[in-house]
Image: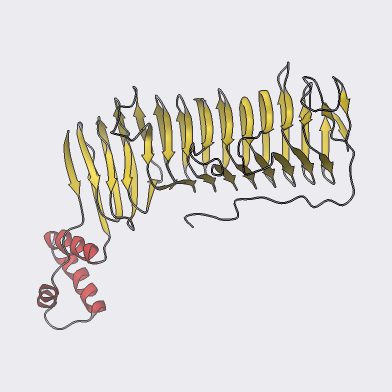
Length: 407
């Protein structure tokens, strides 16, 4: 494929600027002179504006994708992409401190075996959708090998990645849809995802601030995991409207999952799975065929724990050996409403404490956290349920990511 290199033009020489403005000028006069030139001559518009952007170490340009032609962005700035193409990749290969925004405006790219957007290097890259536009990115076949890199997503980034905008982004993938090897943040926008593996995947952390997200047909909806470090891998959701139908886990993380807000409709073998799971708010509906919420021992640095402090959670379990809330460690319910329908509502290996909120088991309100011992995982008997009505003062250790990235 041919590659079309995009970079900001060289900065305008100061002597030329002074001559163009007709005398000595300060920085404000220089900018005013550039604006005046842009009004007088269309040719001067391109020349002066691009050179002024370069002087500010920022670029701003518009490009139309073409069949078989890659685009490489090598400097910081905002790049508006339009058009329709087959087998074209937008590469970002910029400096370590460069921040790049790729603005999609009615773009359609269909590739056979390569990412549609591939971030090789940058400080941070944002993929933004223009208001009122629908943008479609598709990879139809198995991803080709890229040296030692497993670039296996329609949007693939080695660095921090932000998704935002006021338009719609449709992604169809034979593998993952969006993947970041660092942090992935969703700030706004509408997303429609259909894939074979994970809709949103990150080594370190996934944060959802807002947006409307629909995931269908993927193995996992959100997946945060670092194969080399089991202390990493977290998901934080503070808002948005999220609907996930997954073959395996709707939301999966190695270390922690924290939900502070938003409206979530989750369906899968498991709804939410991590070592530590905290729900502080939001409206969450889960339908699952294995565990609705599973605090599993996935991180060697954390104790498995489910903690609920607020919000509304409704869990409907399928028949068979299923658990509404399953913890390989502890369960703490301090607030909110937890409504579970299923043969086994709770299953835990450590302690369970109820200090507040509302628990509903199969339509009956209770202040007990029962333990289902079918299969012996509860450790207190063989079959049946053991109520745990421990109340009183309790201040379980709060956990959270304790940080926000890419503010």
